[in-house]
Structures are given as structure tokens and as C-alpha cells.
Amino acid sequence: MGLVTEIGAGLAAMTLLGVGIHGAGAEEDDLAEMLGDLSLWDQSFNLRLGAGHNDNLLLSNLNEESSPMLVSGFDLTLFRLPIDGNHLNFFASLDDRRYPEGQAVPSEQTVLAVAQARRDFSEAWLGGLTGQYFYQNQVVDASLTEADVTTLPVQGHQFVTTTDWRWRSHSVWWLQADLSGQRQLFEQELLDDYWQYGPKLSLGWNYRHKSDVELGYEFSRRDYASREQYTAGGLPVAGTRLHYLNHGVELAWRHHFDEAQRWRLYSRLGWSRNEDNGSGYFNFDRYLASSQLRYRNDPWEVRLQARITWYEYDLQRSDVDPNDERQRTLVSLGARLERKISRAVRLVAEYDFEQAVSNLSFDEYTANVVSLGMDWQF
Image (cartoon, rainbow, N blue to C red; front, side, top):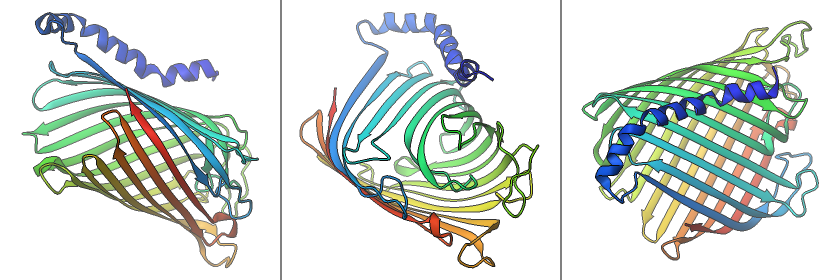
């Protein structure tokens, strides 16, 4: 399939969003007449500039490369006031990091664009459609689902479309069904393009101070374009085609401790199972626990977060003791401090720590990233 056709398929949601906006035109004209000079649309623009340091650009314990970094980026948000039950939103973001002393990794960039249309069909029913594009030019840890590949600089394009339907019961209980499709394109021959698609079902409960609990189950299938199955010993099988099936369950809890919502805790617990259609060489269980604590009291905002992810493989073995199955633990810690200088300007300091611990010698690394910058809102 050609790149133009693939991009068209990935952006199908954007076209449908346009149809939805056109269909609401007459209704919007009536509202605009009633509101007079008031606009149904609002927008915001944020510009970021900063500097910092990254002590492990390649996420490696064999070829560590560090460098100062220059950080820049922006966020653009455009949304329509949902006074008639129509929710229309657009968000775009760009992040750029330059490493003056980086040899293998002179820079990293990410671009994200999301367009969403949702409608309240009644007090109980809400439906929506979302289109998303994500570009990455950054170092990625690909060892979890790839063979003979660890961390490497990756350039890729991701297109995602999602449709969702939500049923609400008196704003307390809700049930939501999502169906999504994803197309991933890579510019490296080491990584194979793929399609991924599947449904998700979520049950949620809202309680005081806009807090909520959500339990979700997700199933997805990933079909690779040309990647082959592997034997139990880790050798490719000619003439075969690889795909993954993944089942996952996650419990999420968002709690505001006070009515002013100064204190918020967001925690997640999850398990997922990945299985391939061959010998099971890529089969593994993943366990996740994460939490973020936020305190906001003008002019200060503080965020502390921690995340641990544990992987346990069925057939892959340790290179330290071949009798042991491969295991891997990823630990991430982060802190963010914001100080509002004026109505439009904030001072932001961030620190991120990441460590991979494994019984494969090449599968471990430690990275520290620190930055200080300014954020302007227009």
C-alpha cells in the first residue's frame, strides 16, 4: 500500500469530523444570532523555551552519550463551547530538543495533532469520533516487542482513529465502548510497519469533588507488514507472517481531596497479556503501577509521579542464567515545579529519572533529564 493511501486511511476521521461540523452549520448560525458578538469558539496558544541536560541520550549502558540540551515547543488548542451539545476540539503540540554535544543523537522532535467531535444525543447518551496524528524522531526502547533490537533513534508516523459511545446514569455511573484503528509507519528498515485495531470497554463511577474510578478491558490485534514468526529458540521462520494479540485490564482512580481541587491523586493498576501467532517467543505478561500527586495553589503548582512496569516472558531466556525466563522492570520518577510570574508567564523546572533493570545484560540503562524554562500563554 502506498504512503498516500495509508495517510488517507489514517486521516479518515478528519474527513468525518469535517462532515459533522458542516452538518451543524445551521444550528450554529442560530446560536450565533442569539449570542450577538459573543463567539462560540475559543483558543489558546502556549510557547515553551528552556535548557537542561540529558545524561544518556541513547538509553544504553554500553554507549552512554550525554549533552546539554535546548528545549522549545508550543501547544495550540481550539475548541467550541458545547452549549448545544456539540463538542468540537482541536489540539496541536510540537516539542523540539537540541543536543549540542550529541553525536549519534543531535536532536529529537515530536509532533501531535488531535481533532475530536462529540455530541450529547440525550442526557444519557454521548457519542464521539477522534482523529490523531503523531510524529516522532527520538530514541525509543524497542526491545520489548522486537527481536535483536534494543534502543535506537526512531523516525515514524502514527495515525489513529477512534469512535466511542458513552451511556451515563444521572452523572454517577457511566459505561463506554471504544473502537480504534492505528497505522504505524517507520522510516527505519530495522522496524516493521503495522496495523493495530481493537475494542475497549470501560465502566466508571463519579463521586464528590469531580473524582472518579474507572475499570477498563481492552483487546487489540497487531498485524505486521512483513515481519516473520520466530521459533522457540529465537530464529525467524521463513514464509510466515507475525501478528500479536493483546488483552489488558486496567483500574484507574482520580481523587480530589478538597472542593477547591488543590490536591489531586491519579493512580493506575494494570495487567496485559501479549501473545504471538507462532511459537510464543514474543509472549509476555506486563504489570503496571503508577501514581501522580498534584498540588495547585496559585501561583504554585507541584507534580510528583512514579511508575513501575514489570515484564515477564514465557520463552525468552536470561543471558546470565539460561534456566531463567527473561524479566525486565522499568522504573520512572518525575517532578515538575511551576511558578506563575504573571498572568501569561510561568517558570517551569522538571526532573525525570528512568531505569531499566533486567536479567539480560544489554537490556539495562539509567537516564536522568533535568530542565528549566519559561512558558508563555497568548
